[in-house]
Amino acid sequence: MRRTKEIASVLGSLGFLLFFSTILFAGDGQLLPRLEKEIISLVNKAQKVSVTIIAQTEVVSGSENIPSSPETKNSPRKIINKTIGSGFIFSKDGYIITKKSVIDGAERIDVLLYNGKFLKADLVAEDPRIDLAILRVNKTGLPAPEFAPPEDLHVGSWVIVMGRSIGFATAISFGMVQGVSSDGFLKVGIQVSPGIIGAPIFNFKGQVVGILFAKLMIDEGDAENAFWGNHFQEGLALPISQVKSRIERLIADSKKRRGWLGITVSHKNGKVESDTLLVTHVFPNSPAAAAGLKAGDYILKCNGIRVRNLTELLDEINPQKPQSRVSFKLLRHGTVMQRTVSLGERPSLMSIRNAFKHNKMVSPQTIHNTRFGLTPSGQNKEMLMRIRRLEKEVRLLRKQIKKR
Image (cartoon, helix red, strand yellow):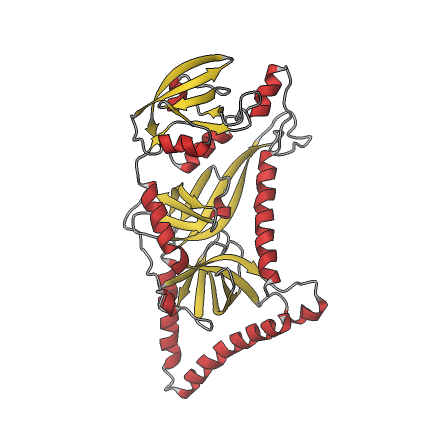
């Protein structure tokens, strides 16, 4: 089966060349310049909406995030980790689409446009189910793409993938849609260059038809397949027709002004009954902090209503607008008390995560240990984050390989 697909990939590429060669030699000698102009026009149109994503995370040598060396043991230094990926402009008002795994854990995100200009981006929404992230740059009037209708995409359709990555010229790959998997992913025969994951896939009209999610290639250790090398790869792409409306809803939702409390909660609350929420973290300078809520408080009621889980708490908070006043009945060290919070405006996802990362969360186990004079051991959060991200990628690739 694999050999058949590899041969089909090779024949598909040869067919592409033979098709155009036949046209060129059968014409009047002017077809080559005309074809060249058409390809250049297509590339120019596509590259204007293709962007490079640079996600940065700061770690400190000698901390729990990165091991120290003899040179840095006594003088820890900051190290910037960068993840490079691709994405594309979704709308003229500054919304950018990329793969969620490209920006996971990022403290700063920059977008590099086709004209060489860097813009700072903010994470405004994400969908873990389809591994998409929506960014926003503070610039309007951006070139927006056209989106192909679903009926225009078929097995055998020719496509172009346009990605960009720092240190490389614009990465352009031509290929063919080879099939559709049972979960809706497109299998596209293309060369996948470094940094191109998250890139848009265009048809020959310059319309976006999909988003490149991953690559599958021939096992280089397979002697039987060594002849084919790694030049004929399969890219996994998500059709834009499956996610466009979802992206539009997420963008619309991100524009709504909602009230923000500024806490995290857990059900793992020790001695108190299991259907009572425990405040595990209060963000500094948040409305909850201003009202006097503290990590370790148990939430008994919100606006006079018993809240037994996060869903019930969100049902009370989410409909509220900024400046709305919300009352809480709390239990702190055996004492019942009342607190009233004036909600703030919900900040961006990245702002919340950055604040959370730089201010340690108090977990139920931490509270338990503190009461008994114990100090919880440190965890390598950065390493765990990377391992989970890699495990997710491996699971996806294995799933797709089994279907081949």
